[in-house]
Structure formats: C-alpha cells, structure tokens
Image 1 (tube, rainbow, N blue to C red):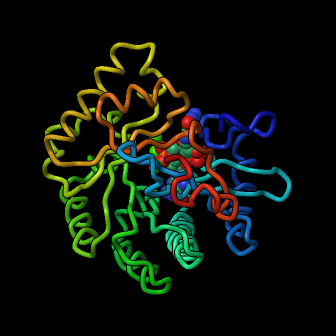
Image 2: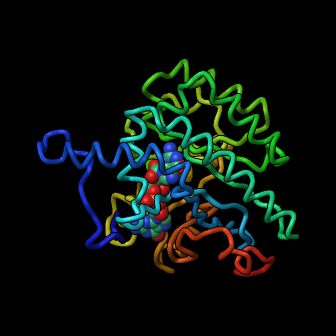
Length: 279
Ligand code: C2E
Ligand code: CA
Ligand code: CA
Ligand code: CA
C-alpha cells in the first residue's frame, strides 16, 4: 500500500457510507479478475545468511486492475476473505506458485522453496489440504519445496483445529512457517504445541531494530528461543545493510526485504536466482 501513491484508495472501511458503492464495484471486479488474468503472483527472494545463497521465495499476490492499476493485497485480500472469493483466488495462487517454481527448476536454476500465504478462511476450510495436494500433483513440485505461511493470530483463533490441519500438511512433507511472528502476543505458551518449522519475524520489529532497544530485544529473544526449539528464523522487511548486519550477529537464518530485492514477476528473477548471485 505504501508504494501506491495517488492510486491509494480506501476500500475496507465499513464505517464510511460512501465507501459502500466503491466496495461493491471492487467486489464485482474482483469476481472477474481471475478469469481476466488480472491477478498476478510476484515473488520476493529469501537469502540464507550462512552462505548468502537464495534458498527460497515468497509468493505475493497482485491485482492489475484495468482502470486503477496495481492494487495491493492489503486492499483486496480482506474483501476476498469476507465474500469467499479467497477460496478460488487462494487455490489459484497455490497452484501458480508451484508452477512457477517448477518452471525455474526446469530452466536449470538451483532448487528453492516457494512460500505461499494462507488466509484464515482458506486455512480453516476443510479443502485446503486437498487443494495443496492437487497443486503439487499437477505441477510435479516435490512437497519439500513448498512452504505455507500462516499468521500467528490465525493459529490462535482456533488452536485445536489449526494443529490438526498443520499436522496433515506436515505429514505430506510441506514446510510450515508462522507469519507475522511477534505481533500476536499470545503464542509463546502455544508455540511448542503447533507443528511448525519456521518463525517469520514481522517486519515491524526489523524496521525499528536499529533505533529501538525494545525491538532489538524482542528480535534477539525470538531468535534465541527458535534456536532452542530447533526452528528456523526468517526476518522480513530488511531494508538496510546495518539491519542485515545485526541479524547476522544475532544468528538469524534467512533474510528477506527490499535490501535484496523487491517482489518481482517471475521472469525478472532469473539472474538473481543463479547460483552465487549474492555469495
Ligand atoms: P506479509 O505476508 O506480511 O508480506 C510482507 C509484505 O511486506 C509484502 O507486502 C511485501 O511486499 C512487503 N515487503 C517485503 N519486503 C519489504 C521491505 O523491505 N520493506 C517494506 N516496507 N515492505 C516489504 P504485500 O506484497 O503488499 O502483501 C501484503 C500482505 O498481503 C502480506 O503480508 C500477506 O498477508 C497478504 N498476501 C499477499 N499475497 C497473498 C496471497 O497470495 N494470499 C493471501 N491469503 N494473502 C496474501
Ligand atoms: Ca507472508
Ligand atoms: Ca508481515
Ligand atoms: Ca501478514
């Protein structure tokens, strides 16, 4: 949303009377967006600090609206979540992410993981395991190269059901990351109950890590705890070499952010995905 400038408009504000019409119009457009190929997946590289190799990418959805230009997911995912369109949109995103990853492999690039964001309705839907299985089967991507990112607050909404779904995914060999980690407050006691592999530290802590002692303390504690629990840590929102330096000192495993690369269409990432691009 930050990059959108004058195209930035508010759609998700139920308190605003004049927003309703806008919202309905956006909703009907969204219904057609998939069929019109207006939805795209961008990808943002993730680099391991141990050897500066790109080990994965996160898939981030974009909507290229015919009249309004690029609309960020923060503006339409909540809407799609509410009206159920997240189910077809989310299934498309999972399938597309696997397909793009397979295409990179076929092009001879080093194998990497692809991470897909799952929203609440999508994750709690009984179908999610099947949707993921079908995508893997159709594209031929081995399950160990697919990660799912689920927010901390979503997991806390329905702990037992979340655990049951995570177990099924993990049995298939899929990697599980807790997204926006640190923002959900309640998770520490539950952390060991969830079958997870990765903690993804929210960008809000990384942005302030150089100026704010509290953020530094939190990031440092999350990394130390993850190491004790045998979990991998990814820091998102790394924009500055000094932030990267601190994360390296703290023993963070993987970084992601504008410093390395902004989210980009798959064809733009070929050179960056070559071996030794950052190494
Ligand atoms: P998220 O999963 O927390 O993703 C991180 C966001 O930070 C992304 O915004 C990314 O483009 C942005 N970002 C990455 N590096 C930097 C950086 O160095 N500095 C700053 N300031 N920002 C950075 P984006 O792409 O607008 O996505 C927003 C949110 O929309 C995501 O937050 C995720 O929750 C959701 N989303 C995106 N794609 C999908 C999708 O396919 N399905 C679902 N359900 N949600 C999605
Ligand atoms: Ca994410
Ligand atoms: Ca985040
Ligand atoms: Ca998020």
